[in-house]
Image 1: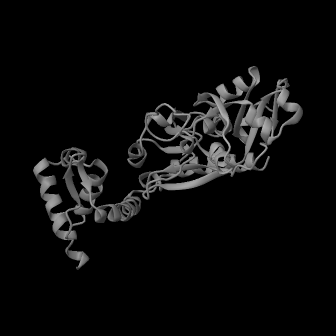
Image 2: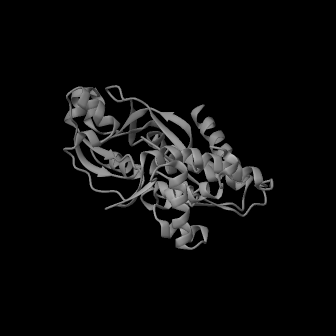
Image 3: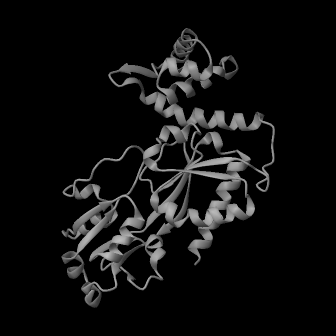
Length: 314
């Protein structure tokens, strides 16, 4: 096929169709009529010799070929968009921009306070809109409606850019008067009662079934490998709640070390190593290809990376 004979607008149509999953929504997004978008889909099917989107009970579902094309087309279009836009400098000292960041409670507690402190010095008029994972979807990030997602991810869409912010180990937070302190080994750990903090992802959360150990995350996965199980009395989605409960109750919280160290100077708390090995976790930031070349976004990513490096070196 000769590329010179391909209408490049069709690639834009396909990019939006795959993001919206609807001819009507894609037409609205591009401010064209529904018949025009339907005709564009027909031409795309002829071009790629594939149905691309098939109507199912779940709506318009992309074919395997369409899913293969999606990250390629998104990358091509984002580079083309960046190349034809006039270069504009970003001046943090005078910028009044608002950055929307989806952040887990862990990231919000450990990383973002120092980021906000540096913003106050370097970019005093910039505003951060911090959003919880349950407020957004991958689709929101992919469309650039959310500037960045900062969390621990098992998987991310291929179209996303991502970077590891840091790796973190685990620590146990215990009330300093807890009798377990005198002899903190695996047996006593398992005899104690525990607080669990969720690994929060995208979308609306649901309740936890304590019996579904395989869904409880890193700590319980490692215990399962040893044919062990801890007694979890409280399930929470907030690290500060876990830390407060560990401080005031005879409950053990096993948390990422950077979260545990938030209370390291509190005399009523002991922060100790777990009595078994738990693999480190990776905190990542992820963002849309649509924002990858944005000067302000580049500046913010660099600031976050610098803060993360400083905290990792402590």
